[in-house]
Length: 399
Ligand code: T4K
Image (cartoon, rainbow, N blue to C red; front, side):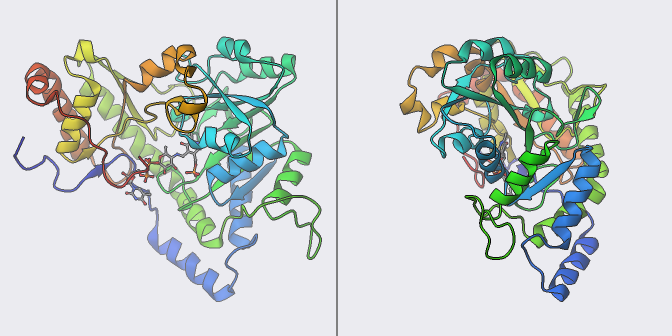
């Protein structure tokens, strides 16, 4: 409203974690000395081995990003026709299917867990369905038992997009051990990252061998291509960052957890604000700080709240607004999809993701909470003053 913003510098949702800079630079020097920069080099092999140990899985195949990892996993599983997927996810989940001319059939979610609702999944199955692609949103697992049961009974493949769930567990096993395979994103903004990167993990030996071929043009040794493939390789510099981040992962998670607990404490009792709860009994990475805003109860709409936060340089986000089914090309392909997605649409209108991570301190978290409290206490006035103005898109993100 004309004054200077609360924060002089923008507060992003997820600034990258860096870890021990010295350790990373040492690795970069080793890499340069060795002149081995990509193609299954020593850092990639070490990273894959450490991830296998960390997750307790038989195979880890690193990739250049999470989207390509999804594309390869989908292809390696032989998915065709239709695949059931949530609309409430980052658009890459749907694109990885459509890119291969597989129809993403958008399915509604459970309002509490924000993940696929198994009963609805069952209703979306047609003779063309070949698989289910569940997403462990915010690091919280899908109902893996119910989805496995459906997949087994209906003879479908089950794949998980675990992009948000590195370091999380479910039923006392690390995520990475469910379905036929699971896919991680190691994008710079993730709790564990490799600048750009991803991985497919599986306990299936044959599937792993196929995926390894596919991510490297189908090469089974020099001059010998035995399968159609792509270039999905992770570079050595990315793996060097991964090894460095892995050494500090517990610290990153501890910071996220402390921010989550502080937010939960300081926002307690604010009308219309629900903090998405993380399990107390399982491992969580606390990577996404998710609120659900009930505009009626809060006395201010989620979008106006976002606008005010942005004005104060708090670049909160509406992940995953408006839902894949309301983005192109899906909006044109399936103009009536929303009729079957009431929970997805309601959630897309409520979610507000707040800044967290190692770039933030307790003071910043306290000030963001103070701002939210102020906005809700003065919701009526803010709505009168600013209510008619549209939400602008914050700088620097994908959308
Ligand atoms: N499946 C799911 C469920 C996913 O969430 C994702 C990725 C994928 C699949 C695909 O995986 P990848 O192919 O990406 O590996 C971000 C990420 O770009 C995206 O990886 C992630 N999901 C998604 C949830 O979030 P945006 O739209 O938030 O924009 P971004 O990454 O440009 O920036 C977020 C904020 O962080 C910005 O405001 C600025 C700040 N930032 C960003 C970068 C890259 C920095 O401070 N430094 C940086 O280096 O998508």
